[in-house]
Length: 127
Image (cartoon, helix red, strand yellow):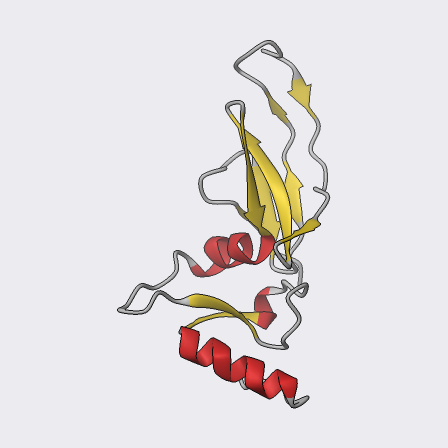
């Protein structure tokens, strides 16, 4: 089932789905030279940046490039847990372009490295 959640820090501007889609929301711009202009919501174009799918998000005239897998996890699982070693986002099937929530999980660098070894052998990581 498709579920949309607000992108934290961009409430009212963008939403992310549990399938890794990002969309902007219809909104009126309250600032700058386009003050009062209404932007119609639409799906955002994703592009590869640093081996991962990314999108550009804008708010208050500031544009930022963000990884899709980070937005999915932030919206649905919350902020990354922090321990002695900072947690990473694992792509359980080894495909960096598959950003479905069911394919993503927070884990340690050690767990992520073990996943890479499994994928190199053609095996799939255990959720």
